[in-house]
Each structure stands twice: as structure tokens, then as C-alpha cells.
Amino acid sequence: MIKFKPISRRKFLLTALLATPLAMGAEAVTFEPTWLKVQRLRIGSGEPACRLAHFSDVHHKGDRDYLQTVVNTINALQPDFACFTGDLVEDKEHLPAALDILSGIQVPLYGVPGNHDFWSRISFGPVRECFAATGGAWLMNASHAIPDKKTNLIGSICVLPQLALPPADPGAKNILLTHYPAHVKNLAGRKFDLVLAGHSHGGQVRLPLYGPITLPHHVDEYDLGLFQTPAGPLYVNPGIGYIGHYNLRFNCRPEITVIEV
Image (cartoon, rainbow, N blue to C red; front, side, top):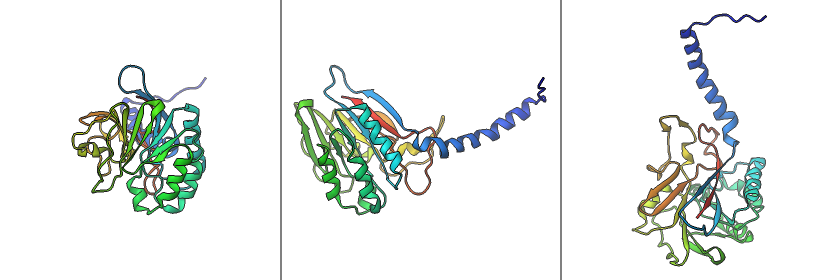
């Protein structure tokens, strides 16, 4: 018979307090950075016009297997099209590999650049060709109509000053793709059926009852998830990759969002 040594309540609580940060740290480093999540939501009422997959902030650094898993998951979900909201890479040397993998997406892929795409000085020509080859488009202050889905996609660049955005289509669902969530405050009263953004990474490390430890600029209160804004419903995706050298995620898994609009 196994006999357990009695432990006082005080020692038990002390052990739990010491063990919790270690467990959180192990999860943040080992499990969550590539523990891909599929989030599903529906925007609006009535019969949806389209079903899209939204992902953001790949920050590809050479992990082909992980990015291939993202592509495989999008393909398995069989959306009408996919939307990407910026930051393909941090260093331009990784762009060819990132585009090679993303070219395997089996539905039209639409996207906009993020701040790291500008900072890394990548050539947008190959990106434009890759997205077009899927049947989609790279939208830099441009729009693309999908008539059979009664949907109009409008892409916004994330550098200032911004150029004027194309007009909405009154006969379609108008979806704005932008990198910075806080740009919903700079749309001069325009309204959209849905706004998709990234950039925040959800903070990557989110403490219970507190939220993100830190957030980048141009996020404001729109750190993660669905928000009702004067410009329309805004969904902020927590991203696929990470910034810099430290791949940490806690309570903020990488995500592909499936949205019916």
C-alpha cells in the first residue's frame, strides 16, 4: 500500500503558487506557439453571402512545416476565399519560401501588406503574382468584386498618409481588409459590413482577468476578437507567427477565423 506524506494547507498553496508560473511558461514556450485554433463566427442576419477564412501576421522565419499546416487547415475548411491582413515576413530572405507555401491555398487568396512587409522592403511584385495565381488579389488601396458571392473586398495599406479607398458597392457585402485595427477610427464616417485586421497578435501573452501584457502601436482598444465600431463589425485576428526572436504565446493561440457574412 502506498502511503502519502501529509502536507499542510500552507505548503500546498505555496507549491501551487510556485508551480503555476512554471506550467504557464512551459505552455507559452512549448505548446501554444503552434497550437493552431479555428474560430467560427457569423456576422449579420439572414442567408450569408460568403464564407471566408481569415488569417494574419505569418512573420515566416523558415518553419515550413508549421506554415504548411496553416495552408492545409485552410484547404480543409473549404471557404469561398481566404483573407490575409498583413505581415508575411520580417526579413525579405524568407519571402520566396513563404509565397511557395501560400501558393498551395486552393481558394482565391486576397491580402494587404502589414508594417513589417514595408519595413523589410520586400518586392510586392512576387506577392501580387502569388495571390493572383490562386484567383485572388493583393489589394493596396484597391478593391475586388466577387459577383457570384455578392461580395466586394477593399484593401487598405497601413502607411500614412493613406490614399483614398475605393468606393463601396451598394449591391454587395463590403469587406475591408486592413492591418492596423485602430484604422477603423480614420475612415471618415464610412461603413462596412465587416472589417478584418491583424497586427496586435492578441498581445501573444494574455493573463486571465488582466488581458495582454503588451500591445504594439495602432491597436488601441481593439486587441483581439470581435468589436462593434462606428465603421462596422471589426474582427482582430491574433495572428499565426511572432515578432522577433522569442516565440511565446499564452492564452492566445494562433488562429484561422472562419466567418460567414
